[in-house]
Length: 358
View: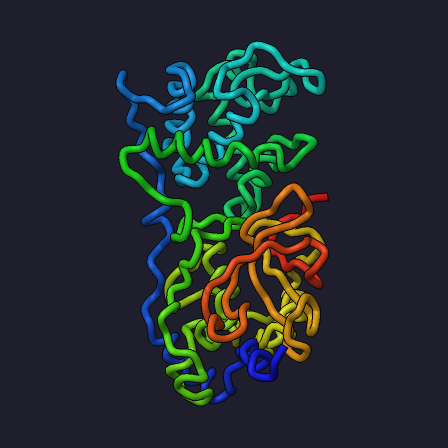
């Protein structure tokens, strides 16, 4: 790796520049409430409603579930989680039987006969059983910051916390089809932790790099407090996005990320930044996790390392990472994706409650 390439990963702003930038950020108005985009969904169902692959009975049950969610002021994201769990438990059918681990399980959510989910009639009623599930979901601490499948598992407590993950896309499709308006849970204030966005949605992809305007210029600094189009600025954008902060003033900044007052800094210090914040790390790739390369690992800069974000996890022991400034000139400071062995990075840095699969 050439010396010029090594310099590209540096993304720490001078203290004076950072202070000026943060001062400007504090003058901005508060971010728009997420409730504007993530509020309850109104259910619209009539005889002409069709969703490919689902029978009328299933759609009526989905509508009942969503109606229960709206009555409890559940967000669109919460309604989608609820539909996802019902798909994973019963295929959106009111089942009058259980399974081996739970022979007394019944209904859309396969709720047990243990007194926590009401009577047999309650468990067999789509609206009532959904109401029980939703109230339990809303009682889970910080459930909206969990991956959808983890949030559902906190209520259901089934053996595999990732059982529901494969039903998420279908749940989104159903909720959108039965809603009175289209919405997106990706790349917005409704963004869901664990999701990596839709490709190159970095807001400052056309902004000048510090090499173009000079390292001491405020024009080189993004609102996150790092240089535009560097690996760390893209990764910190993803962190903000996944935690529901998609406009200024952003929740997570270079200068205020760590509770000890130190800057998050260049890629080399990100693992230490995560440790200082008490956020989890591990060796298993999870969608949306930050990929951390220690200096010299995986072809990264021998002084500053590199960070990226997990976009997709494959079944063959590899994952797809996305990021910025991961290629040599002339394709530096641009978005890239590549498939990497899961053993290549030094660590994966998870968001709060983004649990590592065992």
